[in-house]
Amino acid sequence: MSELKFATRLNSFASGANLYWPELKGKPSVLQMIARAGEVKGLTHLDLNYPQHLTSDIKTMRQAIEDAGLAVNGMQMRWDAPQFKLGAFTNPNPKIRREAIELTKRGIDAGREFGSNLMTLWMGQDGFDYCFQADYKKIWEDAVDAVREIAEYAPEVDVSIEYKPNEPRAYSIFPNVTTCLLAVEEAGSPNLGITLDFAHVLFANEIPAYAAAMVARRSRLLGLDLNDGWGKRDDGLMAGSVNPRATLEFLWQMQRDGYQGAYYFDTFPDASGLDPIREAETNIATVTQLLKLCDKLHGNEALLDAISRQDAVASQQIVNDIMLAK
Image (cartoon, rainbow, N blue to C red; front, side):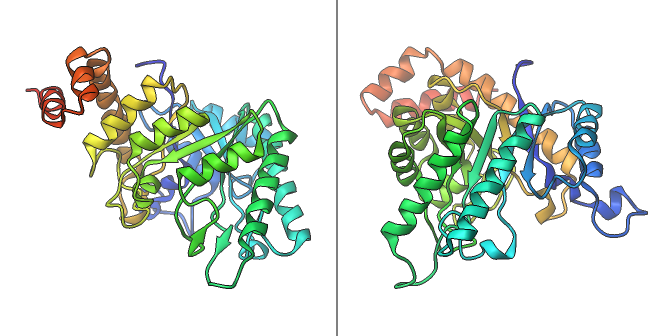
């Protein structure tokens, strides 16, 4: 397990800031959160939001991340500026669309300087809220064209689309695995792929392992956001805390399909004031244990035979014997 990469959300380390930094007035800085993340046992990487986390020059940030014993897994685009509220890649104003595309290219450039070759696109601003608001074919074409241009800008960088059914827009342009696969196929760039966020997949009323299998069939799984939730919203709960069996199946399917990327935790300890260090360490411990269970599932002929016959009773008993063993 030592070769595994475990990454997490940097903003989690603002949780409980008043307790961790009693003298702090206001929010912790990015450099402070990086230093705090370095205290997590087993953590190897961070993801950075672009441009929000670039509050210092890259040389300073690289040194801070190195001093924390970490590396950068990938960059995650955030189009939070007011002009993007009506869309980034699908904005009706061509100048704003161009601004969003060029900003994303700068994010890729920054990622290169951190030694990362992964850019994740969560296009939360791109979608619609009302009937008769959008020309659906036009905004789809704008979104696909933008993704294609970004992928072609940096063919050596993996560009990954992360989907979510809604929020902040009422309906997202890419709300589920099917639309993402269609977009990747239409864009036609070999360095494009998909990031699966476990809670987003549940929110989309999908089965995580099934979504992973479909991505492997038609594209590449470039990123993984591990978390959990009740399926009604993007809860960002600790990995395996609500759906441990579905999480196990998800990890097993990914491994069967050859996933080699980081296990990234997109969880929200700050939502309920949890200690982010303990929370991250619990995520790492949980996934490490589940991956050990995956080892017992690999090559399990009885399980494979039960699945081939769609014998749910037999497969559940086999998995129970492994998951619930004393």
